[in-house]
Length: 186
Length: 313
Image (cartoon, rainbow over all chains, first blue to last red; front, side, top):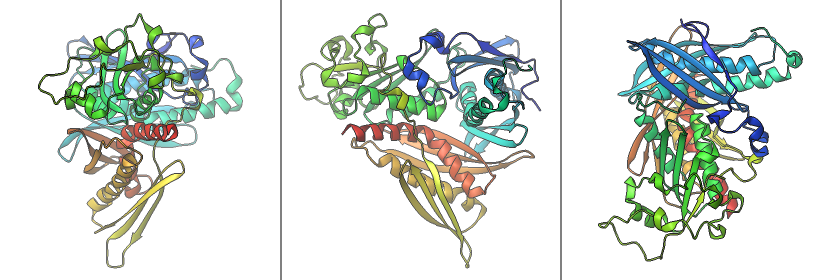
């Protein structure tokens, strides 16, 4: 079962702000204060064939004015193909948590599976994730129609499934007693 | 990093996003451009029934809540006209009226774009300037457009940050109440109530009680309520028809999931919407939550737009 630690994790934070436009400091006060500023949103993604038969997907998300990248690679054919964009997204989220989660326990997002099923006669990808912190283990799911190449759709579905939980973790982590510490185990 | 990659055509998703955006109040046409260097850009042609800032806010709301996809305000261009929706559609070629990117404000001329805070179309200083080269040539065989003189456009988006951005409230429906009553003679009755702030709408259905009913009837009931919310507050006559298509339950060792497929029909274009929810509190509840997830994108934008429209009046 793939999780956010396998396949040679390639994730990290970039100093560039979302879209590489203005620095966070350059953002308007209005946006800095906006209540949805802590939300996690997709900035972009890239798909490339790193070697014959192996595809790599990179996902970039933004949270609180900072951008985070995640990448994953896998076989171009099923069943790996559907998992690669979801895994890249989870790694970007993991990079975000590494920076912004200030609590003691390390919450994790584990990709359980991405399956293609027919709903009616329509092909649909279902992303299944387990979110775990020290207290709870919660199943998270989302679905997207499979039309054409669906990397972006699967990335969005993965975010749809996880962002509420991650935002909650970030909010709780910021209030935890250890939130003031400067460094944290990586 | 770009929103998509040249090698990975995402036509299906882009088309769905465009149809989603074109379902918003005041929006006549939407075009999403995925640019390798500039990222995602959204170009909107809108009527003047809502301020540019509110159109921009509705677009952002639909993209953010519905898709979790960030398009910064300065990547959303709203071209607004005083013409009615019908007149604009006639000019732009009806359903296929997609916005020519050339209609957008040149990148090196942002100062001409009026700030949204005072961007009521009539007051915008840019209103008088954009038109001739902005307006596409009317297709000759189309119905005659009333002679209103030059098209008068106002541009927004570059400064399209919603007014009072710190108070921006993206909206979506919540499941307020779900009641199930088993009938002595078999089957069950279901009562669903969805809420948007202080407003709620409910629906009731009777079901025979088969396994399919437990999946489909709650979703269909919820969809009826969602349709009511979408209809309410709109004066442009645009109907977004949401149709329940199918539902399926998936079980694996770690997950028990309901997946719902809904079809949205907007101006004759059909797009599939999907949602999924874990069966942690009953199949019926999961079915409703999956339906809400499937339709979030449409609902978020429309509720935001309708609220803005109502408050503008």
